[in-house]
Length: 282
Image 1 (cartoon, rainbow, N blue to C red):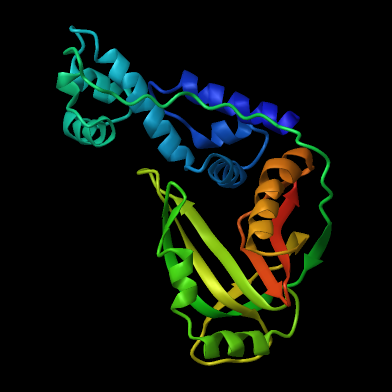
Image 2 (cartoon, rainbow, N blue to C red):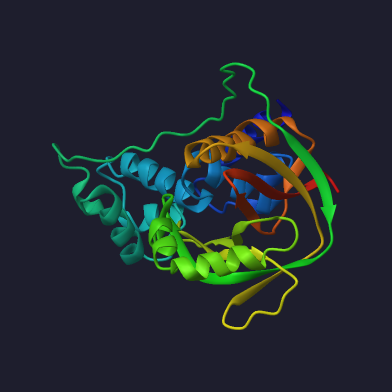
């Protein structure tokens, strides 16, 4: 697969530039995709952000360099992108559990985070029902949460978001759904990553509606091209389908992710996953 080859070439570029500056636009270029697509896909496939991956690889290699009795902490700190020995020492101790100056002594336990590679594993042909639709702008009204994600752990947890919404509010949201995507809508938008390796996004739980409803937050969705996957079954089936979209369908398609809401819509035990896309090199 060209995309899988590109993802691995991007990781090779990162490995070759652990010492010095890593340009994420150049990383994405090696993967034949946009920077947003690369960041989002990497996070979804690996379970960590690209910034966190780079941080762990640098701290892993730095620990090996510090075994040299002639190595200076300040030199290695600068070599691996830290602007001061103090910031490097804090990051190093948080990750490895010891100070950099102690690494050269024997019997010190260190962490190793090996280089990643992406592979496509075929476990058997399973059909995926989807359609591609160009849709005009629409509105989602509902309850909004500001979510932080560290190593795929959400704060607040998704179960807590749902539990905090009264049943009467859920019923009201379902009742105002009057156009696609139909039913109760879960929309994740404004995904971004920071240098510390965590990610943030806005989570809306609501309905696509033309009605004016006071007391709800509103998400204005711009005109976009969508790939829409049909899912029959419980939440386990939804999670399996979501993973297959990113690990199987996207790498083998001629499309890439664009910055927009990723939506799950559920109605009467049927679900649809809406992913905003564009043709590559568009």
